[in-house]
Length: 238
Image (cartoon, rainbow, N blue to C red; front, side, top):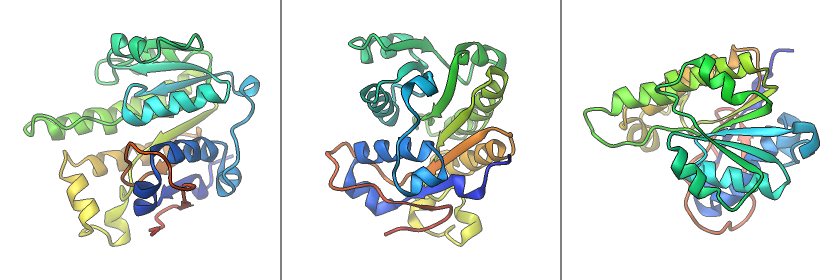
């Protein structure tokens, strides 16, 4: 069946900042189980049911925590990262992680699909890293738009059962009257990243894959100060 709109959830902005990245990572995995489970912060299916989980962007701040949380729950993980050496170093202590080179700018959808074989669940924690101000628009489009779209196509080719996309708060800001929101203005100033992410979100929605899209607010590297708050699509949480 076609995925319901409730599969798109937005994580509160200030709540996420105050409560820390690990609390949000746990909520991400709960939301990945589906809308009903997300509402009650349930759990993913047992590791034996899910099999291998592929994490794209596994060496980023969020990606590393997603891998860590999956391992704590007993899952086997394939960690995809632009730098294979960086991934091997980050996850050297775990025998349940296979690290693979995964550059969405350079790889074709077919090549990506080969890396995804055997995974039932894909978690996309990718995002372009701002650098040269003259290259930001190009990079945001290449990673947050085109690269993510290729990953969606690869997931379909590989027979993935569920796709979780970690996007950003206010990707849909223009449509909900938040275009002048400082959060939208500042974040989108980096290569139009929110506009590029929204294109990929819409592509995933129409892909036919079972999916969850999460739109987190600001995150920080700190211990959680409570449980994460999850709301419906385009809900502003305080």
